Length: 509
Image 1: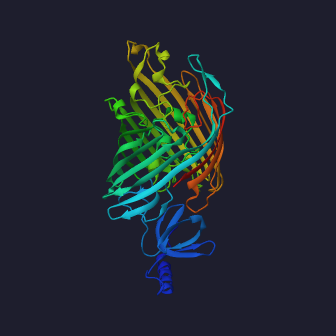
Image 2: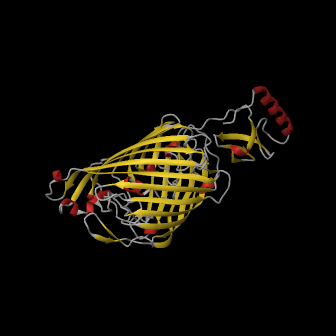
Image 3: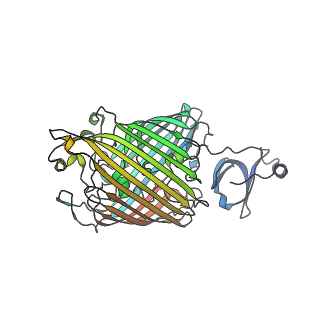
């Protein structure tokens, strides 16, 4: 952080500057930024952190990198520190309302309304993907010895699009999020399009309660850090295999200081998409909790610890930044309440050979499974330093309490345990322009030990200061060994062994 100049020189500079502007400005005092190229801007500094500084002048707010700034002179007005809690970049009730028309750099989109009784921000996320799976083997054999076909693709799709509307209304403690979401890969399917969202109320400045549709905090990749992944809209194979999805429920979340966050959710099931109210049983037996802690450095942008921080060191930390995370989920899953096989956010419980547990009676001597308890633990660690990012996660899944529709003896099947890990490494080859990454994961299960690896690059061609990350071109090559997962929104296909190539253009603001 930049230090304030001593009191006496500061007053002299402010006085000289005020006399210079007398008659040209209605402001008696102003903050002054002197850039390394000799330019000087005067106005009101509205916010700063270790990386950037925002100043209001000529009726607008502009954000600059501190790497370009030589000196700062403040007037008497102190600058408020970043608040510990925010939602999609919309600050908590104690924070100053953002200016009308501003495009926020941290996922809030454009502020299109900012009135006494509420605000409205609009943002868009979308991407176009070319996928080539022609190098995959066209057959695979599952754990029961049955040979099956592999679904192979070679196409271009405007894959997904989401328009989000968010802000507060009537009270700065009452926040809303509504979004229109479409997966163009599966248009014509029952979940090709969706309207979703939630309502949240701040109990305090750092704690809130919410209800609606929310991501279950089953793992690091479900901490609402989407789409800040190394790959576009893709987690590792093991991350996709073990995680829960987006569900309907209620939750409590908040910050304990500036470096610790928690979220706990009580939900109807592991996945909402493709599941209507008539399919849900009466147990309300899905509980998922995640906590994450960033004890060293600013792992997340100020006020953004709620999403755990994106993957990779895009900003280039001058000092190491470290985080730890832990997640636990317990869910009683019912056969009737499962989402469709090809739903875009499919989180049906699969085995390590790709079979769906509710659609594989051969696993249970012909018995038809009606209910099973899913328990999952995920623990992760991440480090960012000078453009390097290393993020690793361990998974443990335990399935038990089998209930059958027929006379099958549930005691004949004790439990099924799968474990796995993932590791993601990345490096900013060119500051805020070009990133390279290598990713790998493996699953250890009763029906095989599939694994995957991916290597690729992200290119950020738009170099508007503060918004370099809003648009990227991603190219990667992925190798899978008998993938246990797959749907039309992922580059993974069930049973796939071999190389898959992708080229993606993504926009998010």
